[in-house]
Structure formats: C-alpha cells, structure tokens
Image (cartoon, rainbow, N blue to C red; front, side, top):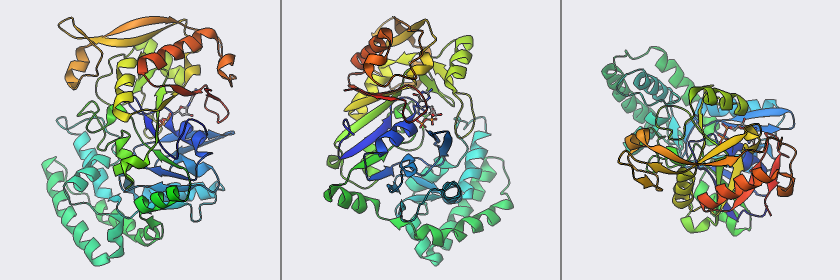
Length: 429
Ligand code: GDP
C-alpha cells in the first residue's frame, strides 16, 4: 500500500488506544510479515472484520489476514497461558494458524508471580500507578534486573527450574514487603505455565534474522507497537508510563533488526485525545463533555473495560510524537466520533504557571498537571463521515480540521479512519 515502506513501523502517538489495531489490520493487507515489538497482554487491539469483532492482546493484528506470518519480538513480555488462550480462540473461530506465528527465543516470559506482584503493588497506596495488573511491569523489572526467564530457557528444564526457583524466593520477600502473604495458588499456576513450554518452543524463532531474511527476499514487513508515545518508558509521562519503549526506535531493539532497515514510520493519532490510568491529560474535558465523548467514541479499555478520560486534540503531543518517532506519515482515526460536535478545540501550546507559553512537550510530568492548554477553535461539520471513502467526500470543515492537524503535527496525513470497519478508511492521495 502506498505510504508504507519495505519495513514500516506503526506507532501510537498519544496515550495508546489510538486505533492501531485497525490501521495495522488495514496495512497488513500489503505486507508479508507483521511483528509486535514491545508490551504484553496489557495491550488490547480491537479489530472489526465484517460483523466480527476480534480483541487481540498479544498476537499481531495481521493474523486476521490469511497467510501472513506474525511474530512476537524479543521486546515483548509473553504471558504464555494468555497467549495460547488467544491462539486457540482464533483457531476456534476458524483461522488457520499453522506455521504463521513465531515467538522470539529472546522474549521474556511473564509468569503468574508477575501478576501477583503487579496487583500487590497496585493495591499499595505508595506504589499505585494505574497499571492493568497483568504483571507487565514486574516482568520488565526482572528483565532489567537480569532475573528474567526467556523463551530459550524452556529448552533446558534444569536451568529453567533453577531460575524460576531463585525468582520465587525474591517474589515471596517482595510480597511480604507489600504486606501480602505468598499465595498458595502460586505453585499450581506456575506448573501450568511451565507445562506449556514444549508448545512454546514449537513456535520459537529468532525474529531479527527472520525479519532480515524476509527483507532481503523482497518481502514487506510491518512492525506493530502497543500503547503509545506518551506511555514510552523514556519519553512518556514518567512514571505514569508502561515499562517498555513504545516509540519507533523500540521497533529495532524489540525485534532484533538494525534501525537502518526501517524506512517508514506511520503514527496513529486519534482525532481527539484519550488516556486511561493515572497521570496528566492536559487537554482533558470537563466531566459532562468527558462523559459525552466517551460515549460517542466507546472509550472503554479493551483489556480492563476501564473508562478512558477524553480531551481535545493536543498538537503539542502530536508534534512531539512526530519528532521522537521520526514519523513519515500519520493515520488519523475516529474522525467520525466528532461528527456531531458543533465546535472543536485544538491545543497548540501550553501556558505554564509563570504565564509563558511552550510548544515543546515538557519533561516534567507534574508540571503537565498545572499547564493550561492554549486552544484555537475550529468549526465542526455536523454531518456523518462514516461513508466517506475519498477526501473529497468529507465535509469541508472536516478537511480543514485534518489540514490543521497535519500542519501542527508536522507530518503528512496519509490515512483517515471514519469508522470501525475495514472499508471505513480514506487513503489520502
Ligand atoms: P489500539 O489499542 O490502538 O488498537 O486501540 P483500541 O483497540 O483500544 O481502540 C480502538 C477502538 O476504536 C476499537 O474498538 C476500534 O474498532 C475502534 N476504531 C478504530 N478506528 C475507528 C474509527 O475510525 N472510528 C470509530 N468510530 N472507531 C474506530
């Protein structure tokens, strides 16, 4: 598909939930391999194919296109039980997966004790950061702490038992620190996860060499991120972030290819802004409008059902996302959600407490709580856009809104999504 390269990254440009699943699903049509590069079962992509809805947590959205190879890179943390539940559910719905899914031997494995630790930390007043409680943070902590268990370890049961045993000792201490007793259920669940090892090894691959060989053979590759730029461990609103690099550079480290192999980066932005979990949302609506747009956009988490906070489009953030990801293009999603609003606001800067206005996304997360967005007003279009298939089908005010988003973001809009269905997409010529 035009607008993509031989090796294209699809990255969220806000706080996740931008509709990456739909864009990956649309772009996957024109590629041979789709690989996830970070995150775990905390991400939830919702994709609509015809009247069917699929919620994918770990397997790349490309799986819904017959014959595409789908990989989970070394940068993901793999929840084995959840992964196979998802895998088997897709087979039960008629998908043929034989030889289509590969998991990096270097990927870290999320074990049941990671979930226990996550929930224990979230229930502590001091450590709460609004995670999904899926154990992702603790699994990445073990990775950085060099205590992790990787897919490759399943090939050596003695080493595996040794490593898990050592980790368990630390887990018990940590749970004790957080005021929780070690749960008796832990052992049984662990055995279950370990029993899946053989099946896991049957899917193991080395994603870096595999993707490089595919590119050498002239195949096209899509690298799919989870969450979004403002949740990146380094560049997001730390500490209210996820535990991995969601931004485009993470696609190279998270799959094992060199950065020069990537030749296109498509940023997905929602036509407004949402955020789930704790942390600042500078353009957040007042309660009544928040409720209204949440309902219009169905803004409830795919993984947890949590209501998302909603706000106006924030070009301070989208410009930052264009810079930090090196965007070559943008896909704007959920334009149709704004169809009934008579007037829209776009944040173009932030006014700080001292009255000065900044255009750069501040590093100080707590300063973001008190910034006052500087808005410009755009007229709404008050017409349905769901049937538009070309830019010329869109109302003039919708086109002007998109032009302004493009101008402020500093990267060309290449796709506009106007509904949940595959066909509801406008490629911008
Ligand atoms: P992701 O994690 O970035 O893939 O985002 P989610 O799956 O959490 O959210 C996307 C939701 O928005 C899904 O239910 C999609 O079907 C839906 N969606 C995606 N694009 C559009 C769009 O253009 N319009 C509308 N109304 N819904 C969309």
